[in-house]
Image (cartoon, rainbow, N blue to C red):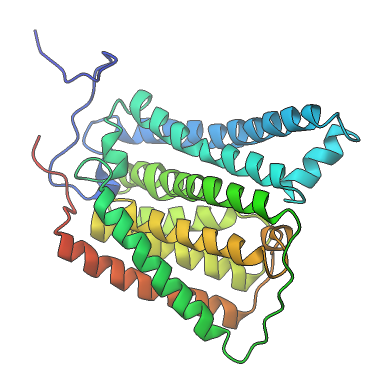
Amino acid sequence: MSLQPRSASGWPLTPTPAGVTYPRVLSGEWASSVRSIAGILAALVGYALIVPVVAQMILAIVWAARGRPGSFSAYYTAGLAFDFPAGMLATQIGLAMLIPVSLIVVRYIHGRSTRYLHSVQPGLRWRYLVVAALAAVVVLNAVLWISRIGTPLTWTPQSNIGSWLVIIVITSPLQAAAEEYFFRGYLMQSLGSIVPNPWFGVVTSALVFAVFHGIQNPALFADRFGFGLLAGALVLVTGGLEAGIAAHIVNNLFAFGYALFMGGVASAKGTTTISWAGAGWDLLGFGLFGITAWWLARRFRLATTTSAP
């Protein structure tokens, strides 16, 4: 009788191959490519169904609690546009569901330990995540304010600012981390088990990430695609999701935070066009953070490949 490693739930686990980079964690077994294709389809279905359903349920509860003002369809549309705080709450929590979607697909379609979705260590390396986030605060804000030298500020604080601020602080980290787990986490690993070259997963996941943001002009697409490439490259050279999560959280927190005082959250949410200069400054900030995060990873002596079982 052969023994197989099992999780606490008793389900058998397929061993993770030793000495592989993060994008290749799901490789190793003869059916890994087949499982990955099935997993990608399941993850996309989860994205298409679970995210909007959760958002709709939250908005339905709030709409009913407020006495059903107007039609629900109009309320729902306005909520998704971030016209009021509950809309942001519902949308962000809906996107946060991408974390359990990614974990479930890894565990029950691939039969792998979910700890390797965080990093090759395995597990989430919290100290590095916190330090990388602090570095992102400094680097991204420094580049932002340098880019605005000579540009007058228009301070127009949004009404109900307290409610907005609480929701931004609570939900933006969940939403940002969830997108990293889905795009740079599961999607990159599943693509990496199909095509051995790890850069295929980096580029493809970045492309899907940019496309999933919807309507956008070429400069904004390049901005998002560039961020995806950088976050994917950081996953490869640091062995985990922490640096990408840190940059994504800080970027979203401050983007919506500044919007509270300059233009409104709905305006920031509905952005579909930026200038090439704006994209260039964004990518410069991400690039400088990437160098800093890579240097910090070296200082922390982080593993970039899986160890022997």
